[in-house]
Every structure is written in C-alpha cells, then in structure tokens.
Amino acid sequence: MTDSSARPSSASDIRAIGPAEVHLWLRHRERVDSSDAFRRAVLCGYAAVPPGHWRFSVGEHGKPDLVDPPRPLAFNLSHSGDWFACAVTAGTPVGVDLEHTGRKNDTARLARRYFTAVELEDIESQPGDARRERFFDYWTLKEAAVKARGDALPPSLRTRVFALRAARGDAPQAVSATDTGGVDPCAYYLFDPLPGYRLALCWPPGAAAPPRLRLFLEADGAAPAVSLRASPAGAAPPDWAVVPCSC
Image (cartoon, rainbow, N blue to C red; front, side):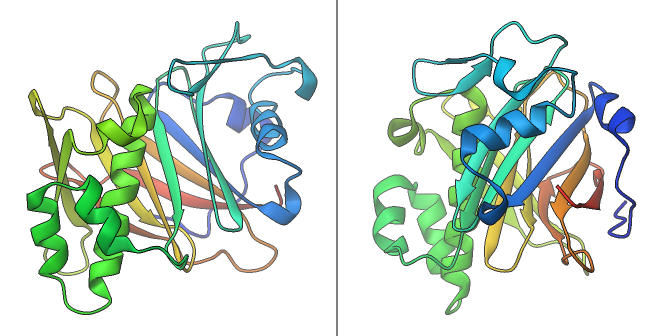
C-alpha cells in the first residue's frame, strides 16, 4: 500500500517504531552539517537523548553501530550526490544504500570488475540508457547487502548474485538473490526516491517480512514522486508510504 499524501508523524509516533518497521530518512545536504550530525539528529527522534550523547562503535570493516542505546535501535547511513539517507529500526540490523545515478562513472568497467557473468549478461541485454539504470539497480542492492552484514565491500560484491524480473502491469520488478551458500534469505527493496537517485534496502532473515516501510522525505511543497522499483520475488508487496516532513 502506498500513500504519498500521508501526514507527518508526531514525535510519539516515530518513537513507537515497532520490530516490523523500517524508517528511511532522506535529507538534502544543504540542511545537514555532516553525516555525523545527520545521524544524531535522526536518532534523537527515537529517544530523549541529546545529540552529543549518542555513542558509536565501528566494526571491522567500518560499519557503525550504537553503543549502549537507551532502547533497542539500529541504523545504517548512506550519502550520494546532494542527499543523505538513514535507515532506522527497532534493533534489527539493516543495510541501506543511496546512489546518484547521474554521476559520471564508467559503469561498464565497474560492472566487469565487480559483477558476475549473470549480472553482466542482464545489463548488456538492456537497450540504450537502460544499461546504466540496471547497473545502479545491482550496485545499490549489492552495497545494501554488504552494509547490512558489515562485510568488506570490494570482495563481497561478487559473492551475492542478484536477479531482476519484470512484473505484470505497473507492479514493481521482482528481485531475488543468491550467495555462495545458496539462496540469500534477506529481503531486498529498491526505490526511485528522487529524480536521478536509487535507494536499496536489505532486510535480514528472521525479521518480520515484509516490513512496514516509511520514507521521511523533506518536502517544502508537494511530496516528490517516489516509486517502488523492485521488491522480493514471491512475496506480498510491502506496506510503504512517503511521509513529507520539514526535517
């Protein structure tokens, strides 16, 4: 279910985030002093903790985590182009990746270096500009998967193979993934959150599926058009909505 006209939630609504929910916060860099200030400001919406009192640890490969949070909370952060993204859950590890698709990268070279033969074949089968779009589909999904697990980025990009299949009508594409041990049990969601941007979310096994997704997106006027680009193959569509906010 999608409701792009949903009203901003109150502070108490946000703090009541449940175990089956993921909140995705998107904020323009002009309203953010730094990625650290952004994550602290977002987390303050979930507990009565001053921004400077949040403490963080860093995993072996750079994944940040909360140290002794006042309640079960987990987060993951991404930045690309002019936007920051932060995913927050009620303690469930999560991975999020935001990519600016308009940046000047040699996507063909990167795909040959980090993607599998199956993914390369799919990219090369796309017509014209759709090749670049499919590259970012896979890249954001792979980064979200790596970040959810706290793995090392370069060696892990090739260990997980994604597949996207067209759906009927206006339904989102179906995404599935396999890893070196077989079927990847995580659930993956892919969004077009803003013009020229792609956002991927990795929701781990054992968590409620599908999660309830809320995208808190700053909107001075009308809410930007957001679309769900892909969701897990064989699963019911997620309950998701865009919540315009002043951030």
